[in-house]
Image 1 (cartoon, rainbow, N blue to C red):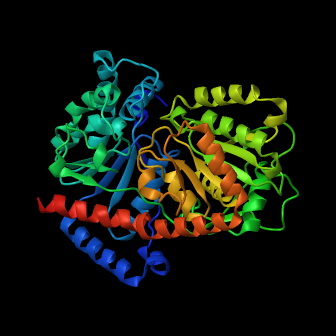
Image 2: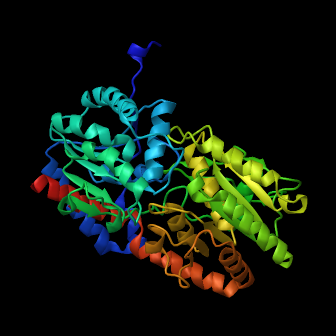
Image 3: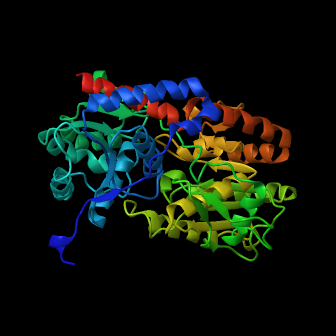
Length: 483
């Protein structure tokens, strides 16, 4: 197929979802209120569509949020669509550099100069041509994150209402943060509203009067978060090669987003020394992209210190992330994974057998999510020791499973965890001693684990489920139409 026949813009088609399923969790009144507002919004749109545009269909929190978000909006009778832009490795290397800058990090040091701007604009110009062929005047277009900001001007010229949603940010300004915003500022002049996860993330280049705070939420019915029996979780982890066998007498099944049954068939690519995770081992887990800002090497080194100081705990560590060839917009993944492997090989021989590096299969995104679900539910403690974080949906997911969580007091993680109540916050993510102490205390105190886990799940139920995110977006859309 020639280039002239190949569409650059991929459209993702999540199935419609019903808000009724939320009734047992949040109550009938709240669901009925949202349904009423959704019906009013559908009428106000007069046949216009709501578009979401981002940079990948799988991997990362944005893609995972869009699957249920688009599905529920469709289920409410609104024509909601999702498009994924195309870019080459040079473009995604550049946007990863911007991503790091907005987190206050130097990244790979790629200059954000005129040459970078030319690469950025040329890629988005090609995507804008495809998007203009399907977006109509009056449509509402939500552009997600730095990769898409350059589409705003063309979408406004096409007659669309444009919102830019930024899922990342930093609480403090600095040279790198300012450099990132200086690059993006010219593309944000045309947007009608901007959306951030925290007030501190709103830059000076965005009109605060037209900026909203909408914190992310999780879908409790998705394969990653749906209820799962312990025997099923163990069977899945044995099947994928993470937990030692033989498997329990339980099905390897889960429910797909469209309500059909799914089954885990693929194995994880696990680097280990010797046997799989012992069935009786307390398991410490961190699940995230292979990203230096998630500090996987720091997690590993802290765990090794724990295992050396407290061998009686018998704990093992699983660092899990997606297969590094599967996430199109994260070109650093393979490089970061190799650095983690090198650090693992440098560990003392006796310690390596307690540390497992797992690349989870991503050919089937629902299957991947079910494996993460099983891994988090099998964990004794879940860790998210990020150096910087926009929000940290992996923390939300862990809290929903009623597992005790140790996480860094950075970004949106601070909004999720009440220190000592629904989890443990590390004020300094690089403080290895504090991390080791927190691990040792939680692994030694089952009652504290149970109490923290229950508090964490309740906090997610009241504040961080997808229905609250839908309520916020419905109000935003209504306000834009009223303008």
